[in-house]
Length: 330
Length: 159
Image 1 (cartoon, chains in turn cyan, yellow):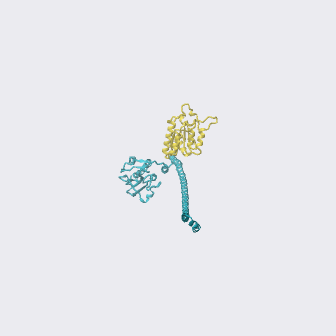
Image 2 (cartoon, one colour):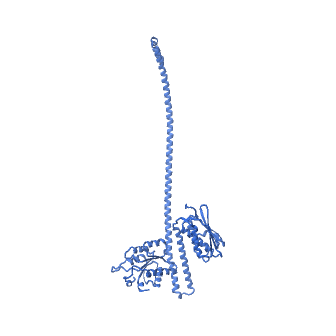
Image 3 (spheres, each protein chain N blue to C red):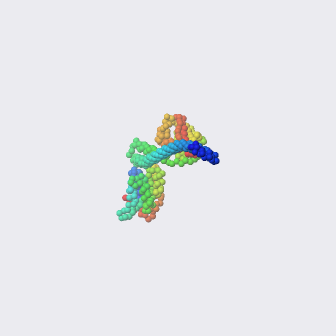
C-alpha cells in the first residue's frame, strides 16, 4: 500500500514544497504499520501464551479438584472407620453390660444358695442332734450299752456338718465382702495375731523378722495371718521344739510375706490341692480342721491382686508365701 | 414358777416342727412358759395377732413373740413390720429366733424395731442355753409395758 500511496502522491511531491513533510508522514505511517504489525504479532503471541496458561490452569484445576476429591474420599473413609469403631465399642459395651448382668445374676443366685444353705441345712441338723440327745437323756434306760455310743457318733457328725456349713458360708462371704484398701501397719497387725495364738499354743516359738507395711484391707488380711499362722502352729505342734518364723521381702512391685514352720510338712505332689475348698492333706484324726482355711487365704490374697503358694519337705516343715502389691497405686 | 408367768401366752412363729418342739420342750422343762401358742407361718401369726373375736373384742396380746424369719406365705420380717407399725401391738416384745446369722437379717430386724435377735445354735447344749436365757430374760427379768399391773393375765386361755 505505501508504494501506491507514494506513486499517487508523486505529482504533489514534485510540485509542492510540502513534499518533504508528506514523505516524512508517509514514512511515519509505514513505521506505524510495521509497529502495528509487530504489536499484533505480540498480542497474538500473548494470547497464545494466555491460552497455554489457561490449559495449564485447567490442568492444575483438575489436579486440585482430584486432590480435593481424594481428601473427601479419605475423610468419608475415616468417618466410616470411626463409625465402625464406635459401633464395635458400643457392641463391646453392650456385651460387657450383658456379661456383667449375667455375672450379677449368677452371683445373686449363689448368694441365695448360700443363704438357703445357712437356713435350710441347719434346721434338720439341729433336729438330728437335738432328738438324739433327747433320746439319750430321756430314754437311756431302754437303750443298751451298744446303742448309747452310737447316739454320740450321730451328735459328733452333726457338729462336724454344722462346722462345714459355717466354713462354707465364711468362704462365700469373703467373695461378697467389699474390701477397703488402706495402709496396714503389718508388724502391729501380726503382733496382735501372734499374741492371740501364743495364749493357746504356749509351746511354739514365733519369731518375727522385719515386716513391710502394705496396702490392703485390714480385716481380711488379718484373717490371712490368723489362718496361715494358725496352720503353722497346728502342723508344727508335734515337733518337740516348734518354731515359726515370719518375715517379708520387698521385690520390684510386690511384698512377699513368708511363714516358715518346722512341722510335719506335706508332699509337694499335692501342692496344687492345698488351696482348694475342703481339701486336706492330713486326716482329721491327725490334725483337726475342715480344709477351708487356705481356700479363704487364697481368696483374700487374690482379691488383693496378690499370689499365694507354699513349699515343703515332708517331715521338715513348710513355708507359705503370699504377696501384696507394694506402693500406693493400688 | 408362779401361776401368772405360766399363764402368759408366748406366741411362737416357727415353720419347722422339730425346732418348735425343741423350743417348747426347753421352755416347759425350764418352767418358763406353759402357754405357748405355736403358729406355722406368717399369715397365721398375723391372723392370731390381729383377728378380732366374735364379740368384736381384740384378742389378748401375747407377752412375747418368738419369730422365725423364713416362713411360708408371710415372712418373719413382714410380720415384725406389721407388729411394730400397729399402735395396739407395737409394744409387744418380739424376739427373732432364727437359723440365720447373716448381717443383713440382723440389721433389717433391728431396723424394723425387733427387741432381740438370736440365732439358733445347732449344738444341743448351746440351743438349750440360748432358749433358756432368752426365756429367763424376756419372761422373768424384763419388765414389759403390757401385762404389768392391771392386766388380767391369768384370765386368758390358749387357742
